[in-house]
Length: 133
Image 1 (cartoon, one colour):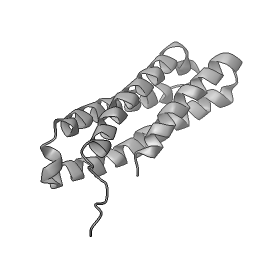
Image 2 (cartoon, rainbow, N blue to C red; image 1 turned 90 degrees about the vertical axis):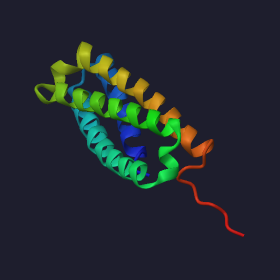
Image 3 (cartoon, rainbow, N blue to C red; image 1 turned 45 degrees about the vertical axis):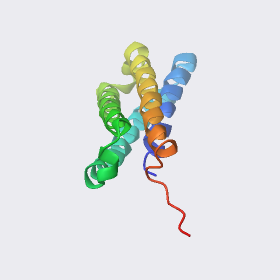
Image 4 (cartoon, one colour; image 1 turned 120 degrees about the vertical axis):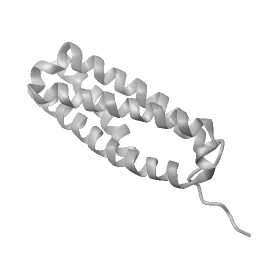
């Protein structure tokens, strides 16, 4: 369940950016920096686990949704890394306008990636325990 952390942090980064835009409080810019960093780090960890599962389990590789999820997840990691990297040079100056736009892009990419991941779980029952009789 590593996936919950990067999802929460991606949404948290957009929220922090929005609060910085509304209030101008530097705390929110710093919180956005941390949220972006943690989203990227936990995303890489989740990506490693997902890649191992994709390559190790033959039933997963046959599903087109698996490869779609993989491609979108790699795109999402790129966006999360870019968002974090944008802020490392100066988190306060990075929020407006590019930081909030990249955060919004990350949330959109998270939604698309999550939809494909949900398709694997709910339609194909990948990653769920089977009930034995």
